[in-house]
Length: 268
Image (cartoon, rainbow, N blue to C red; front, side, top):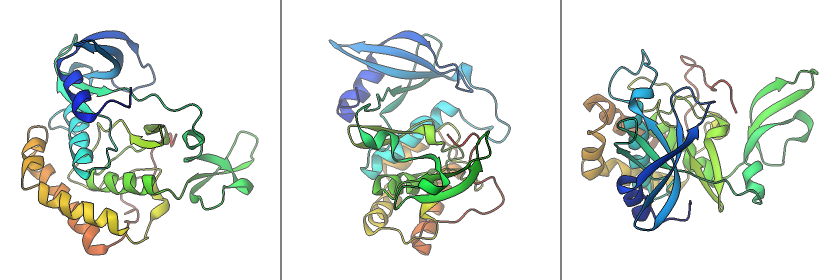
């Protein structure tokens, strides 16, 4: 399913007929897996109806579904395609976010080697340590992730959209491509970055990332900004530009502020 071209996937997600397969019970909000079909093309998708969203006191404006779509719009504008194609559409349970389902590549070693808890004495070479932990038998483990440019791009995106919930389980690998999913709690005007991708703290922004960020900032005054205003408040869209300015001005990945838990729970 992940091999669909973005324009093809967006058309399918927008016009296709949804057939609900079941609910993802681990999700905190109503999250349904479905097949979607149109003009002889069929794929799987995730449908998150607005009516199934749990109210959040610190995200009173708009909808989580709108934030999911906004994350795709920003990600798509980077050219990295870090977020699966996502649209806002009507469905069996009303309007909601509809996102292409990503099947992780089972035989791709990267699918199990990008991040996670590893024994403290067997951290893979080059991995970035995030936090220490112990298992039920008091054996030391480390939360860490690979030094991988795909994760660096995703980490930069999370700063831009102010992702408050980048768990390890929200990072998927398919056909050597890294995707981030579950972006319902992004774009807050206050700093709320909470992620497992802290391994690049203080490091200079790679030139390719800085170049993309400059283009992204310019796009906020054009079609990207117009599209975001359909789902976010004026202040939330403005803060996207402010965070890009901060990244470019400092020229490096940020450090945790200490005013908000730095790592989500559970991390994976």
